[in-house]
Length: 65
Image (tube, rainbow, N blue to C red):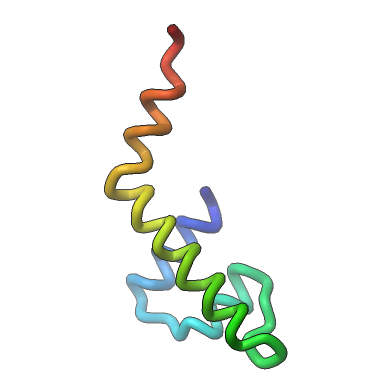
């Protein structure tokens, strides 16, 4: 969750994707630019989904019974 929040914050601040991949995801965009970019994009999409719908599913599944 912390990673997703950091990605959303960085996106809101228009931080460069390669900087976010390096700092937040711990990836090296110079050594592996395609993998870093793909990881950044997929993680950001997942974080955005969590804010739109995913959090509801988590809350529903957390309820007992």
